[in-house]
Image (tube, rainbow, N blue to C red; front, side):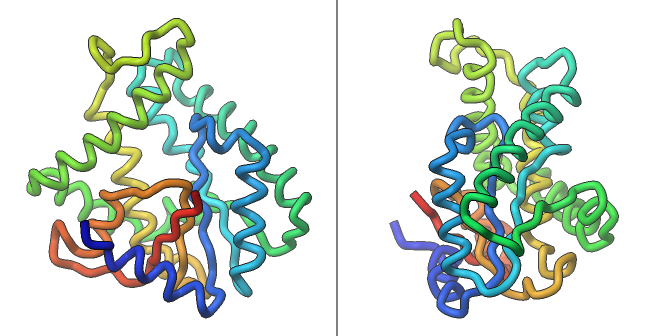
Length: 226
């Protein structure tokens, strides 16, 4: 399979030590291991002379918890995010990074007209593009199954007969993609930035390559730190 331009851009942009955004997912066991957080932050310290932003989607995680049947999704999202944020702060101190900051969804993102426009575009694309809808749902299904199993230790590791509200769950991914597409409008010094994640993310790569709507979004380069 041919490598996406978004992945290529990640390597290219890193040469200029750009702003870096770390993708950190509440509820994902990978990010609750201190050594993984230190690795990501250490990478950022060594490869950026500009902003280091931690994208810890706290508020929008409510969609995930609501989708897997949480009785209090707002509380579940808040508690998970706070626990992970504290771990991140510890890792930041350990790495000695002074310029790292958390993205504030309510203050920085929801108030942005660029984000509102981008989210409306992504929602429309999801409604009219069957391939985008399929890919978003597959990405969402995988994440929600892992989340639901993590919440119920007695549940068999199978998605069969597992109740998931897909219509609710996809809102999380759609909001992530919308935000990442307008980072350069919200934060200074992010005209070209690198989004660092712990695994490949095919729907993001195809979205930024313009594979769904023929709009190439070159501000973001993806780097997979495995």
